[in-house]
Length: 127
Image 1 (tube, rainbow, N blue to C red):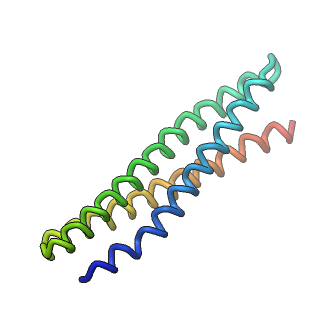
Image 2 (tube, rainbow, N blue to C red):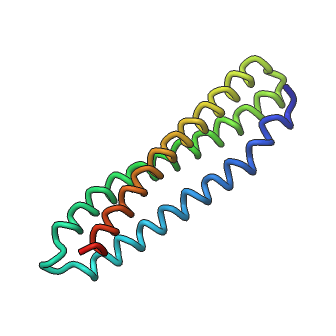
């Protein structure tokens, strides 16, 4: 493995972190919007949404943490390959890819929960 192999992950990880940040900002806007919509007739619906939103916030934070760790291990990989420590560099690259895979798995779970949140919104429209 040469120095350019882990460098291939940089654009992917950067775009992934940007997407995660956009999801977080979108969630923040939903929370701010809910604050203005609360009234006596929809408190139960909003309470269900709040539970959902709290879990999604935690998941997005974990997605970002895992993504940052992935890019950090990728940088360590490049350093180790630069100083010609190939075996250790390969081990760090493996850890970097596993962290990215975990980040994507958490993202997939968060997408499922996001779909449930939309179902809650649709329940309100059905009333």
